[in-house]
Structures are given as C-alpha cells and as structure tokens.
Length: 497
Image 1 (cartoon, helix red, strand yellow):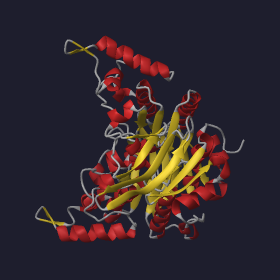
Image 2 (cartoon, one colour; image 1 turned 30 degrees about the vertical axis):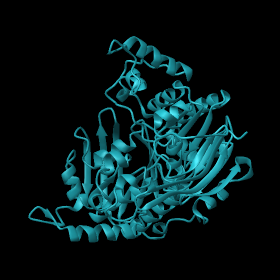
Image 3 (tube, rainbow, N blue to C red; image 1 turned 90 degrees about the horizontal axis):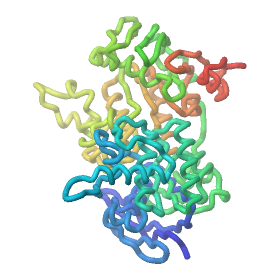
Image 4 (tube, rainbow, N blue to C red; image 1 turned 180 degrees about the vertical axis):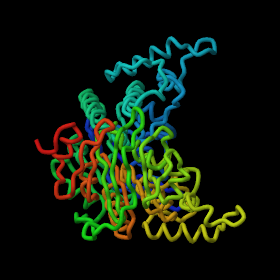
C-alpha cells in the first residue's frame, strides 16, 4: 500500500494559480525531495500537507485513507508536522514555553511549569538535543532554533515531517549536525518531505526527487535515475549555460572606494581594500569571519568602527548611515525579509523606499512617479508578480530579492554592497541575479559581493578578499581562483601549501 499520496492538488491565491492538479506518491520512511524554482509551489504543497493552507481541489491519502487537515493541529493528529524555513518562535519566551505553545499543561487554571519543563526535555531527548529548557529562544543560534523546531515536530509524535529549506541559514557545521539528525529520524521510520534548492543536499540525502514547475508536476524519479543537469532542466524547462561575466572583459574605471585599517572591537580588525568603478570584489570567509560586519561598518551601521573609508577620494564619517547614503553607497542585507524589505508593504512602496525625497513634493509622494519607477524596475529585473500593487510578502524568495535590489538601483548608487545575493533562491533565479549583477558592473557600478557559496563568489568576482575570525588572510586575483586555495586561506593556512 502506498504510504502517502497527493491526488489532483490545486491551490489558488489572488491572481495566482499556485498548484494545478499535482499528484505523486511518497514511500514510508523515505526522504522525498521537492524541487522547483521559486514560485513553483513546493512550499505551498508542504503547507497544505501540514494544515497551514487548505487545498481548493484534490485530496491527500495517508495509508489509503483520505485525510483533511484544516489546520496544523488537525495535521498533528494525523502525525504530520512541518519545520518552516522562517522560524516562528517567540524569542522572548523560553524553550519550554515555545514547545508547549497551544497546549500549555495546567493545573486548576494555572500553567504547570514542572510538567511544561518535563515535556520540553522529553521532546529534546527524543532527538538527542541538550538545552536548558528555561533559556529564551532568542538566545539560540539559527541552527539551534532549527533543532528545537524539529524537537517540537517529533515530540508530537509526527510520522511525516515537512522540511522547508532547512539549511538556508545554517553554517556548514550546523548543516552536518542536521544531516546526522535526519538520518536518525529516517532510521526510526519517519518520512521526510524535503524542500531545498541545494542540489548537493538533495543527491546526498534523498531517495526520490519530485520536480514542480509553475505549479505543475513535472516528474518524480528515484535519485539514482537522474542527475543535477536533468533536474535543473526539469525545474526551469531550459539549460543554464555557464559563462564568464561580461564585466571581466572591460577594464575597471577609477577607484571609488578605499577602506584602510577598518576595525571594530570583537568583530574584525585592520581590514583594508579598494574598489574601482565597474569592478566586482568578493568577500569570502567561514561563518563568523566578520564579512557582514565589515559591510555594515562601510555602510555606517557600526558606531564603534575605527579606521578610514574614502569614497571618490573624500573621507566618509564612520557610523553615519546618512553620510553613506549621500556618498552613493547601498547595502542589500543578508536577511532580506527582516532588514531588506517591509513585508507589510507592496512592490511599489518597497521599490520607492530609498528615493521618497526625490519623488515627493512638499512631503507628499507623487504616486504617478512612484508607479512609473516601480514599473520600470519590475520590468528591468523581470520580477514575477501580478502587479506592482501586489504584496511583497506573497512573492517567491527570488522575486523578493529583486525588489530589495530594485530599491537601491532606483537610488542610482555608485557602490553596492550585496550580502548573500542568492540565499534561499532557486537555480533559475540565481542565474538571473548573477546576470543582473554582471550587467550592473558593465554599467559602471562598483560592487562588493559577500557569499558563503565559493562557486558563486568565484564566478562573480574579479578579486576575492578572504577573512578569517575578523582578520584579512589574503587576496586572490581571478587567475589564482580555486576552491582549495580559498579554503586554505579561510582555514588560516597559506593559499599554496
């Protein structure tokens, strides 16, 4: 008997058909991958299974019986839980309180904190995690939060766990710990529905791969019967050709940014580099190397930063965001949802955020000018959206990233700092963002790119500066690029040893 079946699943949102007659089977105890571009319907399907959304058509069958999960609690009763990409804990509450939310143990109307703590310890014990259940969730790392969320799922007796981009914000060490935990869950017969864009993870962890495209089911194949190139082609309907960025064939212009001995207590020290017009400089390093902190200091977000930053030969006051903006610097942050966008606003409003003074008169925004601006950048960046009035929260990750980038392009920055430009986006959107950054460099923009993915930073950059534990370890020119050399520098060794 088939363990889990999707039959004709259809889901509509305003202006969007997210899923259209999707159907496939999932084996008991397997790790089943869901792949596709952003907006393909992967997360939507997982959320329907977990009771977050209700399907408009079709049915889900579990061990031959049709099930209806009108909400997450109903899904939990069927043994289905979900580990969300965006972790949804209350940071000011303890681990125990978060694990018991929705079902707080009580005695005579009062919360029974002893039982609450014991339940939380039991959940953690099932996955071999050891945390103080009284500590606030807000004090945990992202990887630790991910572990607690898995404990919440397993602690409810889940037989099926939907994992939505589980490693998108994890370090390499945290990811390895997670992979070991997933192997243990499978050994216990728990079925995993694994949503990810990371091809190497899929082929390492999963037995079967289902590909969705534009809300339709394309294929379901055992992992051993396909390969990454075939999966990519199924995801986007075309091949992605690798090529050297066009800006590399052009000589960079004059120096626009010079950083000398930039330091910040406990974060980084004596970081120096320069950046020329039309050049892409990569910043590489392991998690905790200080890459994002350097970018934030250049943008004026670090009041404790010392050293010097010059833009077009003129000193830039440190710790002054307004001065950085006036000098023509833009920052696309790593966390687009928390720091790069206002999710309650629509595409038009987010695009114009950084240029409101320019399109306002007497403090009143010229809505016509705002619409023209938003439409121009929606078309230029090929943002897939029902319209510029669509809420940015409803867009896929890749399209959200494009709107976050449009905000700075609309401001016509001379220097753009881009932190993790393709985190959480699919291969198709990644190729588009790479193409766009190359195009901007060709137009004369000076770009500082920070990425945890070595192939990405190597593909985009003319030079790469490597940091380790806040200190510069060396700089490589493009002819010297190799993952081995970069990893040696990132580990504190000479590039050639």
